[in-house]
Length: 123
Image 1 (cartoon, helix red, strand yellow):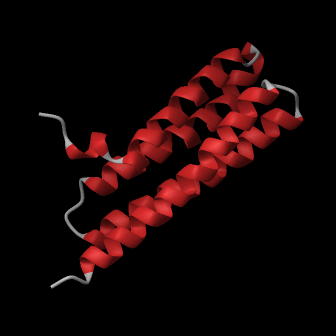
Image 2 (tube, helix red, strand yellow):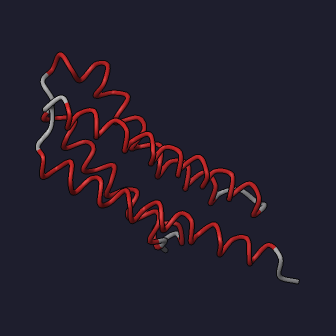
């Protein structure tokens, strides 16, 4: 049976962001993969990892905390992709797609947190 985590839109999009980050990373010149590439990839992968960890927590407050970490990682990923773009280390089209996905993901994280807050106040 499929776990409910894999059905969450916020998680699905985060995994898609990770896949695109991996594609961008693999297109970087090898000498840039070690520093800037690894940090970019770590930030992008951290989005889905934090959502997953929060999902596995028992209390809504803990889940929201991890979602906030995921949102922070999304903003960190945004910073890295903008640096890659400015330094002409990635394709403009990939950067544009990545930034659009991040914009949507941040909105989804905020919505998911709102949903969790409403659930935490239910009796």
